Length: 146
Image: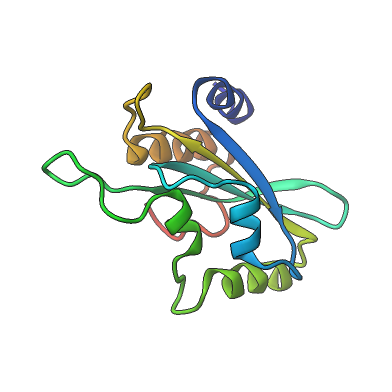
């Protein structure tokens, strides 16, 4: 299965959303405007080049299940706002845009565990990374390890 097919299947199977983030944006406003939910799932970050090409630069998850079957505190909304490398996510994302000369970042998220779906976010993240690896023989740019 190709990565494009896998992502297309996810857009059919799971609650989802997406948004663009530019270097002059306020992250909290963008997250609120786009109704990013406080639910467990996975997300993909694309770097949009100056020529509008979109390259996947990160595949991640939100929501770690504890042994009692409940999720920890950091769901999609919290994960996208949490600190990264000891700085605010907003600053981190703006640094990524600048460092790699992206026009913007495009975020795509999927709720994988809710009343209708019971797929652990870690499984969905691993499935996406595996398909990405199969096509590219490497991890996305900002995925440091798995």
